[in-house]
Image (tube, rainbow over all chains, first blue to last red; front, side, top):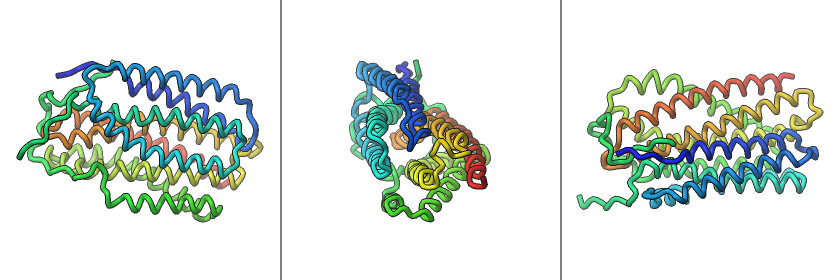
Length: 136
Length: 204
């Protein structure tokens, strides 16, 4: 049986590209004080794309949510460790408040986008209902 | 719209008699090693240990590049493509979980130490003569991050979970493995571009 699914991974990648572009813009000016407008615009666009992706995913009928949440939880744990390290570096480097705020918000967008993409990539190939454990 | 094949699909390629998948998704014995690597990275950053940061960046970057190129150009077309179907299944059952642990660790240690090195050595300053090359390396890393998160890791995870099913879909696994192997090769080539930039900066 083959079923069509919305392009969650592709939309997630678009959100990633926008967020990463903002990070590159900020990182290329550290330790200076660049105009924050372009970074704010890119981050807002990334957040809008990711929010749209969440809405599209949430409307999927007959989706393997049991597997989605299982993968999401573990991916989120791994992401939290990596994001924690990044936060530590940003704060340790005494990045100016405006840029630090934007970088933390970018990490928050990643926190929604990345686990969602990885969990979807597994759950899309699983049956909608959790299989019964075999008795053998 | 993207296409998904659910588990009830008839497998296009029979996996034959396959090995029992490991009890855990990633090899648990590797977790303490990952923990030690990350803790030592944090200590190196906190202590401003330039030697340790250099070590992390050079060793991590070298291993990341070598692994990508090895998977993309040796393991994929040279070995995996010539194995029997059951041998392929057995190889993937052990190889993919290990990659799910090794690659994010290498990426974290390379990028975390690299950013700190660039900051300490003044490469991030816009007044640095080679600053344009540093920003170019940011772009390359950005593209590689999107490829890794959007293509390589989803394929890796999907294969791991598909192999754990009672009746894995061989056709789906083959398709995802090709995607994994080829994009690893492309990332490896982009890594070579990064190495060219890094050696140019280091020798300027």
